[in-house]
Image (tube, rainbow, N blue to C red; front, side, top):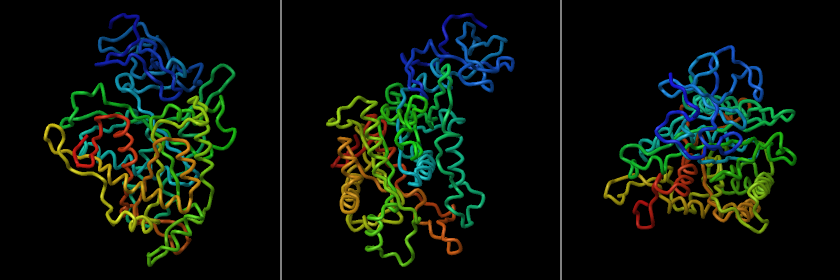
Length: 441
């Protein structure tokens, strides 16, 4: 072993400032704490008796791991402010904060599960980017969602949708409690993914510049009720740090939108949507209000980061959009084009995405103009994207009237597009997109 006063783990490159994905405090790498390994060192004053102690080490192994007070080598890092764990990739790669929010039962969890499942395949095979769990433990719940939808042992049976993914709660699996003296603070737990260019990427040598740890936050709809966001429960304050916001809107929960769906339906069967109706614009308005407050924006000042309005359950209302866009094409908006070096690469078909956005906005203006007004009064860049987490396989079970599906028939529509578009817009060079003349940028 060696003796050192520095607490910086041995890595290829360390950021000058590390941002905690839990409390969003930034700190220099030499301040990072380590988590003790020896059983005698159980109990942390901020996290409770069941958590291992956090400490600033002075002794390290030859391999660069800290040594705890009982002589055991340690492997896990923690934030010096909140004591919650910090994955090692966050020491080397810049964070990219992304927030997803929407009304209860709007389909956020299904959308998230389908999105990450598809991204694991799409990013490497088409865009030469890795997409790995930065912390498998923190992503465990989302991994369970993916398995329930796409690796279900009862894949050929008709199963109620409600049985596949449980509702996001305000406490429990997605929150961690920290004691600051007499004040207990509950922090939202993000899903964390390490992304960096692989061999064959146009910028594969620029890992340090465009590699990221994506910190993805999923908020329960109830978190946007008045009084829910406070010092002891900062449930939504990550939104002020987010480079992209995704507002998930369920058209089938809006009575006005349903009238449009029913009047133009050409489906011989019954359109599959739940009986639930709810107002969803207050969620967007409350989110906008909080972000203005945390980001210190004036009431007349627009947020200068993309807001993506994700319209879920496209399988139930695609008959409204298809005639407007002039195509009945369920393919992903990707094209093979030549990059600046003459190599053939996949790129986002941004003109097609913008065309779908234009006509989706038109449908919303005719049925739910308050959603459009709230979105465009808040952000100076709003794009509207249709998605379906499971595709066209959801139907009402004739026995009980509940929405059900065979997991083996799931065929998501455009679930990766909001995420990929966000990266294309916010991290130049990571995800290429085509220009009007179909050249990659």
